[in-house]
Image (cartoon, rainbow, N blue to C red; front, top):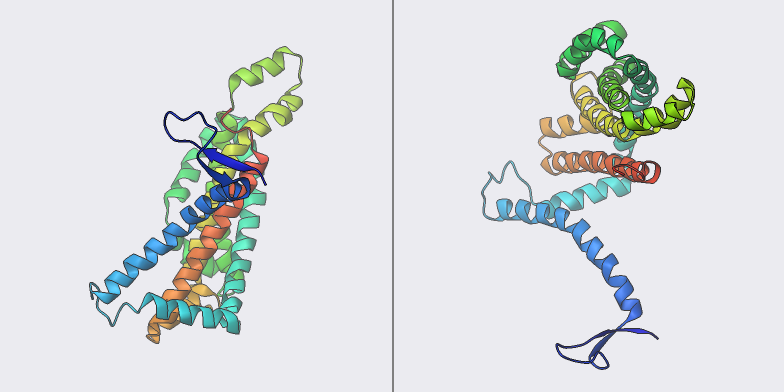
Amino acid sequence: MTSVQFSGPGSSGKSGFQLPSRLSAVLPTLSSASVMVSGPLILIAVWWVAFAFKLVDANLLPSPFATLADTWTNIVSGNMLEDFWYTFQRVTYAFMFATLAGVPAGIILGVNEKVYRSVEFIIDFFRSTPATAMFPLFLLLFGLGDFSKIAVAAFAGWLIVVFNVAYGVMNARRTRMLAAKSMGATPTRIFFDVVFFETLPQTFIGIRTGISIALVVIIVAEMFIGATDGLGHRIIDAQISYDLTDMYGSILVTGAMGYGLNILFLAIEKRIVHWSGR
């Protein structure tokens, strides 16, 4: 078995402590794993300190360990997984609508900057308007069903995607476009071979932000727009019934969903847009 050698100062390198190569290969992985778990451990530690030293009213903050145990029980029983699935479905539908409609719209507006400037006020106005303020309008248009929740979340995500894609197209590197044009490339080839790939980093920023916005809107909609399932409904129902461990656990699971989706799209972005920044 090969080994990694550590020599002291002034030594010739022929002696000293030798670390097995297998262990040296595992150390970076262990280091990465420790970095990943440090955040959750810090959160639990701060939570426990606040609970143990009664920094927060004990009637409002349960023990983190009791909360995690109750959450695990609800997950194993399938009770929480059902609500997780309903929320995940709504977020997925909203995200798909926002992306499929937002990317083409952003490209069309970004290609012609004058067209974008003509509708810039409308996009920025609704993008700056809290999506929750649009609930009454979407309820009037689509009723109390799932479609109204998905529609308002898709609309909020769509605005973010359009904004980022349009600016990505408008800010594509002119030098590369001019270089392609000088080599005789047609406008269509320039768009698909240069502009499209130049836009991808900004597009993924819009997509990741859009899915985060969609999750927030769906959770709030499940809380207040006649939902009978989903994590948002579970959180507000647990708050009303004063089931604090379930309420905090549902919040943690909701945060885990958002974090997981963000990590997923970051991994996809690194895989696809590997040239970003070069």
